[in-house]
Image (cartoon, rainbow over all chains, first blue to last red; front, side, top):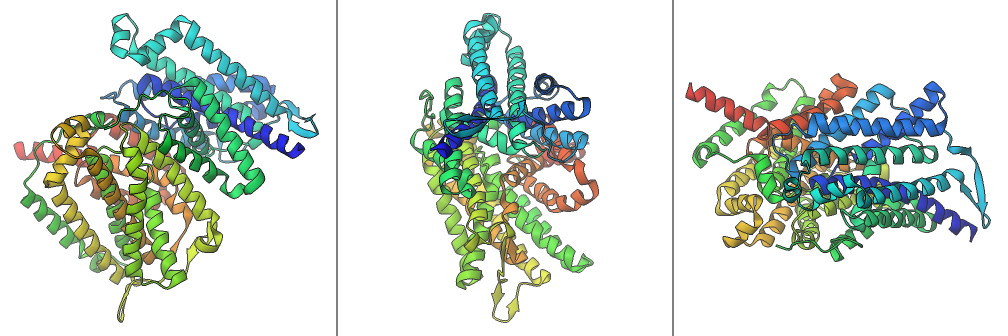
Length: 291
Length: 329
């Protein structure tokens, strides 16, 4: 019983991280129609930068995390300005391929400037454990769940109850109509890159105490986040949350009860099944056009 | 996605005639035949064989992504599926490598059809998504089934191709085999791209709705071209397995699939000669890694951004433009 609770909590913890990364994916997908391959690298960058701040400047962990999140948001902004905006053609296909290049560049820049060794730091309230019904849960897992909840709520509020968020949703729904009422599409894309990078970076900073982070962890994180986004339905915030949590739970349960060797395969098999049976995702709307 | 990718690759100007292209191809392959005499050592000769394998890989991916506008993120997985199918059949069950190669191609084509039929029905990113998951599954299975695949240590004891007394484990002999196969496939791809079917594929890339209106059976063509492209990747895999006599799961990971896509982009999406530049780069890449060490990822990433963003024709497009300018002046 206690081991089951432990497994469920650890699944929810990693699942929240996947959910946050998936939200980043969705935001950029909504504004550009492209799949952003740099999303996982941003999460990796957040973790590594926070570790750098903590180890090099003896910052408190929370300060290092926030600083790293902001820094990654800045990186997202610079990336959009320098590499996405000047593109000759802004087609989703071209942007997707360019983000592949951006992810390679991000990874290698982090490796060159901050080294190859896995780094980490203690959690937001040390390395303590708390006992829940006989199971010992890392405090950081609870922090992850809380922070994810807050971030999701903030994202929801931003997109539904602020002027900027509504403008971004309008631009995603119909760019030309939005342009007619004075919403600049280029600014929407700019904003979406900043938010996606910031959320991704924060996700990286809060998972690092549990798993350590090295320059090549980004691909797997991005991969899982992407799968979570698809599982829930590409473009939907609730879908990303549900998809991420399901993916995390599935992985934890497979590695807990079957074998940890096939935990990635189990998650992806479910993903393939969903794609075959319900391509719009578990919660997505059926916007799929058949040819 | 299809409509946009046409704009990415740029509108193709009417190129040289089929006969001239075929002449160029023949000349190129005849020149390449001289490599074993020119190359100073066995290592460079075997690198020549590797080049032909890479050429098959990149040309088949280009057929899918460049010509038809379908982005597969699992090309390395099909490469690996081919390599392991033929390698395991030969080393564990004693099946002849020749038969194994055919079975490898068939298994890749069938797998591609199974993935393709449901996902290609839908327009959009669904093939990319499904192939992304597929590559991850293949890697996990290759690492996980230790008894069959050798797990993370790789599969050893794969025999080389043989005809009677002739053993293709020598780099020289293998070079000619790979030369012959890739010459055949490249010529077929040239004919395909210039045929009615090839034009239909390019129509699908521009707009699948328009293509369907013109009477192109869109789904059937998409699935067939995905299966064909994967089968060629399977052939490349079998060749790779029987050349190196050893395969390991790292060679067929998701990042290699991405790398292959980068190579196709740098060579030139939808450009016939782009595959040659891409394959050349992919072959010398391990050598470059040695001299550049850690910054190669940065260079590759920058090249990808630069080529896709600002030079949509890739290297092939660049050389075409240079050639045209010279012939005008």
